[in-house]
Length: 236
Image (cartoon, rainbow, N blue to C red; front, side):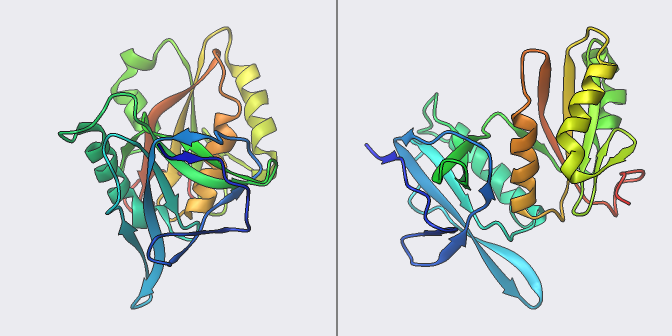
């Protein structure tokens, strides 16, 4: 049975074929022990001026947890399709086993250890919609929540229709929740610009996860959008 509890060693992980993956560094504590696991690798490469991801999952076993080691420089648009396919394979293949999870790996600068963030319950939506449109289309589902749409771009962040400074985001969000909830459970709806690097994606994702509580829920749907295809995306 495999077991991971690895001391933090710079930014690198090395796979079996000796290629280098620069994993994200985050000041957020995550899971630090995963038993019975297989490794998935997303390598960074550039071909004809395009950034691409090279996937290696040849050693994955469906009856184990899967740990995704993804180069922090890759944009979401280079990895999202593969993530969706791999999630489905892990969950629904002939030999899949209940209770096996998908984890993102990153280097935790607080504990100085390799850490993991579970994401197998996430459902990625890539159909050029934003959460605010989905809420309108399914108003009965969300009418009892204090719904807050958060949009993450490469250079700015939005809470509903207000642009927020990144270094003030967490405190501003908590203040906005306190002001707007009026006794309702809050549900956060996350939208990620597909041009975001994986480093920034995981940074924002773990930041939001850190405030999750019985009164603050996070929708399992994550919207990964192309700003050129989405009207009124809050991307300026």
